[in-house]
Length: 257
Image 1 (cartoon, helix red, strand yellow):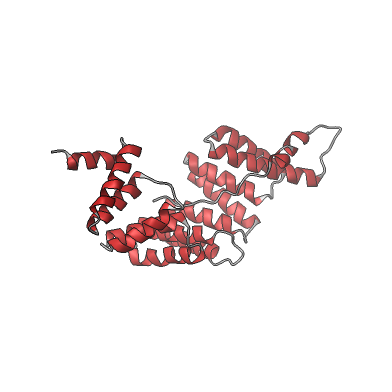
Image 2 (spheres, one colour):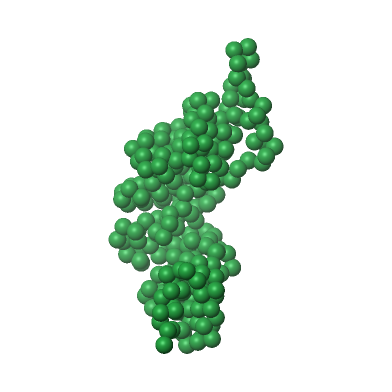
């Protein structure tokens, strides 16, 4: 179960091209508006490099963005995520708090800080930030915050019933949110409600990636519901698409004479 940080999409290439047009020099001071735009572009580039795993270049871009505009909250928020990836949790928290000080209304920042806090085992603090983000009527992805709250509850020993409330809130906001559908499928499956698990998995099939876990669940749910043909079809898909997965290996072991 993975929590869901929010990284907004990159700007169009026409905007990114502005980065090449911004130069520094003693004889050509840059207007403040251009510096702010350069900081925005460098932040987006930093996020793109971070997503590609190029942490050194990402750090350079984000440091440059903060140099250009020290009060740009998204740059501090992205740098916090980078520090978290590198395992520098103290610096990550400092950057998250700096970002939220600069933009206390950002639900993206609240969601992402919640992800960080949950990862540090600070469940109650994390849930507070997820709730703030999810209940912001202007937030474009409250389903991510609701889902993160449910996952965090389960990861830290909370009840499936409490987590289910948050997953259902996520699906009330966005009925096709893959992560919430998958979590509800798991909860239903684990309590033996295979009919409901099948329904959630069928909905998930249309919007989420196929994985060894989903195929294994689908196969077992269909077998429990008495549809041996459907169960066999999912088993075949599992072995063909993910032959080296632990689920496929376990299936081969179970079916070996």
